[in-house]
Length: 185
Image (cartoon, rainbow, N blue to C red):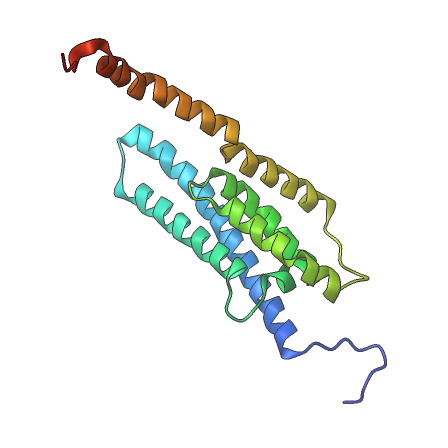
């Protein structure tokens, strides 16, 4: 075997990273299949008054989603920024996860945004000439930001909650206290 001038070489880390991305993508595809099966099972539940299989499938899908997100964001061997910034398939994984993140009860959106923004300077510095975010993923990140911001309580909302609590809970007790019930004459 001779050396070719235009041969592409990768180190073990990049090959492992590519394999990890492929495994994540495969798991997302199986999650898609579970989601389709779960929908089919749920329609069967309505017609047959329920079977234990349906709840097992939903729990299995939840565990698989948790596993995918954990391996995508917190993998011990492979850095999230390398998966997302170096390979476009890493961005595709984030785009595919988005539909599951918006319907899940957990707050993964904020965690992903924190990880993404925390990694941006690394990605730009590491791949200064070729790093880019695919437009559809940019749109999805914008949607994620909007959803996270909607869930956040603003100072005005917090003040309104405190004022309502004061009017409903505390003020009647203060009026009761000042009405002369407890006079010392």
